[in-house]
Image (cartoon, rainbow, N blue to C red; front, side, top):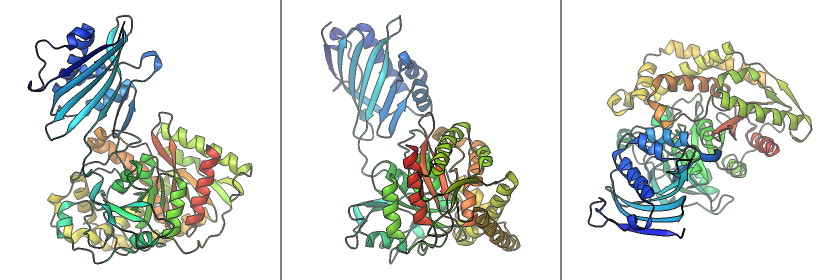
Length: 547
């Protein structure tokens, strides 16, 4: 059969098919019927028909749908993605060009005009599937209009927003700054538009921002955060959920959500954020990034909007370990106070905190890492050992963390929040409401327990590094963020892991891993206080030896 070609132009038809078009003359009638059925289902948001028209992974090869947010592989993933869409897209078919290459294969390119402006280009590969020879889509790609600014990632952006102060080791590198840091001439929004309106213009940039600028980096823009950095999900009711290109349809992780997505999407090299309860490690784990939370107090948090001074730390995320290390040298020009470490510690009991897919990926990396250390391939580590973090210990650490953080969160933000509950997302408002009832006596008791717990964890770690999972699961699906109970359970399990470094004030590096299904997850390497740059180098070596 020779190639068949049709060019259907819908100008003047309002997107409706004419009673006869030349497609009918050049395409197989059942193919044309399938194409039209798909277009009608698309406009009507008939997800059952759309799911039926995508091939169910013929010959074991997954069907594919891709767009600017990433790739969905497999019929189940595609159908799940479609089921989350609440409304039919408001767009009009302008043009369709189809080429039938042979009796069983065709390519269709369609142009749809969006009601909000611009066009969507949809490219599909259709094949006859099965004994019945029914036409199904095996591949689809959508090209959307390029937004001027993705508001879910950026609050304000420039080209650049702030030039480098002078040439340096980071010259040519770009930075997304979390909307908690002071940037000269800008306001701090803290992820809330009402708070942004009441914030003063910053007279100078935060010390961490200045360190990057002095090292030659440019500030591309100010990136979004979960409201007041009080969430680990990455969702924001005011600005939207930033994309997760490594796991389309899944949350970005937070609270350093915007910087993480900006890095993962390739828009900047470095995402400058903060980490109180995992706000660097979680988005890094969810999006397949490198990330580091620094030793508490090592880098100044001056001119950074606080959540909890007892735990707030500076951190950053990158796509590769080398850039993570380069940024570390700029942000920590002083020498590490810890020059060497002795052993790689593991705690198998912590596997109980994670889902089966993460457990499998982490266990595999842990086994390879232990083998590399014992064989002498990691020169900075001499041996391996086990340390026990039992359930009661984790519960105690989390309880201490929550009492101190909650009191300080209200002390830092209560004056404003108390008059603006209606301007907050319900779950953020609920956390602040709970915090407002923590008495000073419990806080003072919590501080004493914090000092004891910090000493206990540091003594347990000693002059060694500890390898644990970064988060309890892969990134939850965006559709599941309405499942408050499920999200809170995942958050609680994750906090049991992240509060170890938080309570102890220790540096921690997220090493990107993948589950068997290809979803990002992470291994977290904790080190002694003051070992930050050494810890990054060890993490690099462990990762290199796992490849």
